[in-house]
Every structure is written in structure tokens, then in C-alpha cells.
Amino acid sequence: MSWKSSQTGSVRSLDRSNRLLQQAQNMIPECSQTNSKGPTQWVQGVAPTHLERGKGSHVWDVDGNEYVDYPMALGPIILGHNYPAVTNAVEQQLRDGTMFSMPHPLQLAVAEQLIDVVPCAEMVRFGKNGSDVTTLAAKLARAYTGREIIATQGYHGWPDVWMGQTSLDRGIPDVVGDLTESFEYNDIESLEQIFTAHPGDVAAIVTTPVNLAEPEDDFVQRMREIADREGAVLIFDEILTGFRFAVGGAQEYFGVTPDVACFAKGMANGFPISAVAGRRDVMQTIEADDVFYSMTYAGDALSLAAANACLSVIREENVTDHIFEQGQTLQRGYNDLAAAYGLDHRTECVGYPPRFSAQFSDETGKPDRLAKSLFMQECLERGVLFSGNHLLSYSHTDSDIDHTLDVYETAMETVADAIDADDIDDRLDGEPIGATLRQRTGEDG
Ligand SMILES: Cc1ncc(COP(=O)(O)O)c(C=O)c1O
Image (cartoon, rainbow, N blue to C red; front, side, top):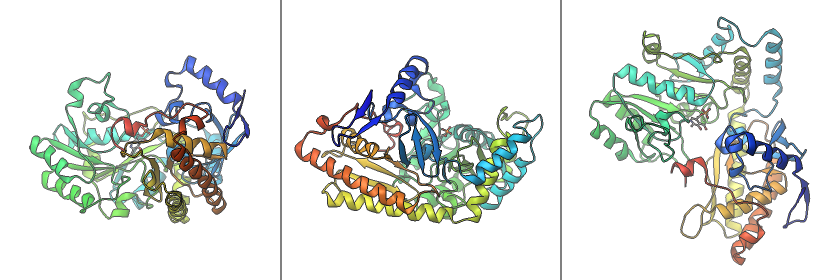
């Protein structure tokens, strides 16, 4: 079955996509290994379900349809898909072997690069996922301080320590969630309250230093001051911001140095590697007899080769400037279009140029998934992989941005017409999107 747009009449085959989704429904709970990549995050029946190839800023679905990519695998693809310097480094290493029974010397090269560029980094350990290293950071803080409570803001991965106090806590014993306390970004009082409620027992402040909203009243600096005053470990989760906001991450961007920071996305252009980097005395806690952190696949030679090549490109070329500039053009262009079509009270790209999110709200200010679904549909149909999340890469060209803004203009016009006519439902050719993970945990609007 081919997919025919009710809006443009164009025909785009999604046959193989739809077949693969059916197979996945039978074999893979949620049909995806990553929440934000699953079918509920896309307009089902209109969006492809599986992507199989990428080059630079473009990807191809399993039916051969081409798209300009903006989620970029949720952030890891910082240079572009199949970026030559990284692909070549990995191909060369592949011929020499992938994993060994002792560390590969590339672990030193990558550690050295991180220590050179990341302000807080005196020692480094690697993992495979962001969750590995955020969880290690929390464990380290507890071991280092001898305290139990973790004060946290933002998403830090799927482990119990992070999800136990959210609404997605099934399968997690209450006792785990009880040891994690949430505070709000830009609400210093909500952080202070945790210290008041647990005097002398807060091990760490864990934060995503850059959120969609800009910090107010020196919020980032004040977290540093509270950690110092209370003897807690300040942990920056830089999994999304590392190497993207500045080569040295958000800590360089804001000029506030944490005790420990976690990195993953953007470190190896999509190869699975993550890192904890931090102050020597905190990091050395790992060497204490009874703190255990070990996994078979961390430190594999392929991911280290990819990280070494990727970090070199980021340091030697103007990657972060390019991402900022292209992001700024696209973000401003989107917001100007929203104003031009009288939708600026209904949709806005919020965040910073290297990471921004197109948000849609109804008249009451609640997330408007129908309007977003229609916008998404119009974009997909015209070759733009729009999820709302924009994580630009070094490979996004001026012509990508121009083309995307043309498509956004058409989509904006359609959404404006549909809101006027009150017929979004009728114009949707598929199932509207479900709530995002951040909406489900109450983080983003
Ligand atoms: C800020 C942040 N921290 C932690 C994580 C978890 O990383 P992973 O999914 O690799 O375990 C993510 C993933 O999206 C993230 O964005």
C-alpha cells in the first residue's frame, strides 16, 4: 500500500515501513529500543517506521524516501551521518580488531582529549550509554560524601535512581525513589527545600545545566554555591550539551565548573560511548575497594576510535560555530513564520540554537499534539524529518535550511488554515502523536 497525501495528492510509498512495523509489533515490545524513536512519537501511517541509511544531514527510509534529518538520532550525530573522518577511523580499527582482553591504548588518547577540553575533567571513565555514566556519577557522589539523597532536575536515563520518583516508576521499589528528590530548573527555592528537608544528607545536585528556558538569576552559578556551602557534589549531565554548546560543554558556555560531568551524545558521532569526567579526588573514589563500576563493552576499540576522530574534528574545525549559526537561522525563521501566519501564540521554537524544540499549545496553553501532528505530516510529506526536536549537525548546509524553511512555511500555512477552519482532525491522514517522554515525566510542556 502506498501513502497518498490528502493535502497534496502526492504518493510516497511506505510499504516496507508498514510491513516492518507489523513485524515489530509481534516481536518487540514498543517496537523500538528508544522511547523517542518508537511509532507513537510519529504520525502513524504517514511517517516512515524504520530508517536505514544516512549521509551528512540526510537520511533514507526503508522505502527509499529521502529526508533532511533534524532529530539526528536524538543528538549523537553531531558531524553528520557517515562522516568521513569518523568512518575512516572506525574502518581502520575494524581491521585490527574490535575488543581485547586488556585496555586498548586509544582509551588514553580519548581521555587526554576530554581532559584537554572539559574544564572539570581531571580523570575520566567510559561507559556505553548516557545512563551508565549518570548512574555512576550518582553512585560516586554517594560514596564520596557518605550521604544518600540525590537532588535531581532533568532527565538522566532509565535506571531506577532517576525514574523512581517520576510517574514512570512501575517496577521500582519505593525505597529507591524515596532517596531521589526532584527540583525545578530556575527555581532555586525548590533546591534549597531539599537541603532543608534532608540536613547533611544530600550527596549530589544533578542537573542538565542547559534547559529549553535560559537560566534566570544566576541559577547555574547558584547551584555551584549551594553545593559548595553544603558539601554536596555538583554533577552536570552534559549528555546533550557536551561538545555542542561549546567544545568544553555547557560548563564552558556558562563559565561554571561542576565537580563531575557526564557525556555521551556528540562524543563519537553516533558510536556508543559515554564518559564521566571529574575532579581527581571524586573520581578516585572508584578505586576504593567497595565501589564497583565495570562492564564488558565499555572501552571497545571501535567506539574509542570514533570518539578520538570525532573529538579531533570538533576541536580543529568550527563545528560548534556552524551548529550555532545554522540553528539560529532555522529557529528565527520558524518563529518569524509563526508570527507571519498569526500562530505565534500557538507554536514556538524554544531553546538555544544548538538544541531547540518546536512546541505547540492550544488556546489554554496545554500541549497541542493535533496541531503538531499536522505540522509533522506536512513536513514528512515534503522530505523534512520533523519531530519538533532540532539538533543540527556540522553537515547541515544553507540549502538544507532554505529548503526546510520553505517546507515550514507550507506547513505553517496549512496549520493556520486548519485552526481557522477547526478541522485539523479531517486533514490528518494518520494517528496523531502520543505524549513525549519529557511530557510524560512532566518536564517539558
Ligand atoms: C540529558 C540526558 N541525560 C541522560 C540521557 C540518557 O542517555 P541514554 O539514553 O544514552 O542512556 C539522555 C538521553 O536522552 C539525556 O538526554
